[in-house]
Length: 237
Image 1: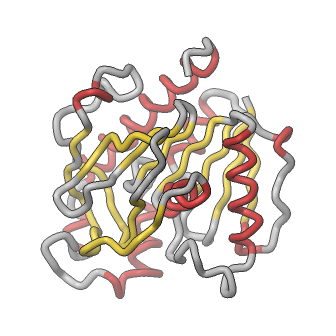
Image 2 (image 1 turned 45 degrees about the vertical axis):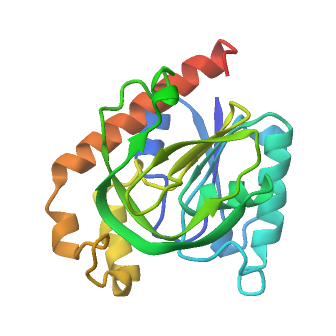
């Protein structure tokens, strides 16, 4: 299986996804967009993973590569590739399928619970999640007004749109299950000015004080990817 990922800044890597891919003997390639690297042909990958980043999806003048990136994401979806978007990645997917990306009512930074819909909990892709799993958040924008073929499957107190599925093979997650401690430390170093204490914004100390959440999130990332791989191979998604 060939996985390609799109990375927007040096400090937001696929983290645990790379470890999982290595364990499953996947071929992994990448486009580091901030380095001006060329995008791949559709034939070069089976799965496309679109990473997070601090930019807004509409900042085309500042980040001109966003235009071609969006076209690649759209083409991959239209070709029936399996696509996973994380945070900014989910917002880019939402944009290319006809949804909107808007400012959330408040920023959400740190460890917070989400709730999955009862319907999606029946799916083997998500049935292993407990009630109100605690996940890592770092966002100010969110996706909204998704097309009818997209189903919102998770929500939190701060943000009603936390995850969606589009046409069975496209997954958007506003939160991060892939993060590792080096990624979180890099986020604090590069974006820590956003961590102004609020109801849904935790301090660096609070974020660092929960190694158990990181372990759980990475385990759930593995379980999700395991089920996606199985269902992709047997044709059930």
